[in-house]
Length: 97
Image 1 (cartoon, rainbow, N blue to C red):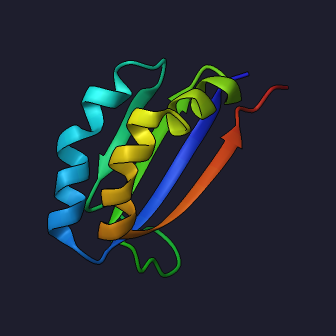
Image 2 (image 1 turned 90 degrees about the vertical axis):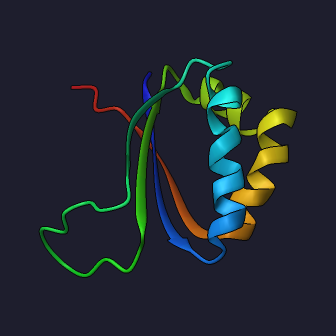
C-alpha cells in the first residue's frame, strides 16, 4: 500500500541543510520514491505554521520507504539534514476505501 512522507522543517543551519539537499537526489533516485513537493513557501490556509519548508514524498509501501530511510547512503547525508533543520516527519498510509 502506498505511503506518504510529510516533512516539516525549521531551518537552523542553512549551510548544513544545503549540503544535504545537494546530495539528496543522488541517494533518493536509487529507491522507488517520488518527490511530490518541496516547497519553501507553502500557502498557510488555516492555523499557524512556524516551519520554513514542507516536503511531500510517496513510496510504493512502507518497506520501500524504510529501505531508503535506513540505507547507509541516506543515513550518512541525513546527518546534515538533522544538523541544518529541526524536522517533523510523518508517515501516512494511503486511503483505501
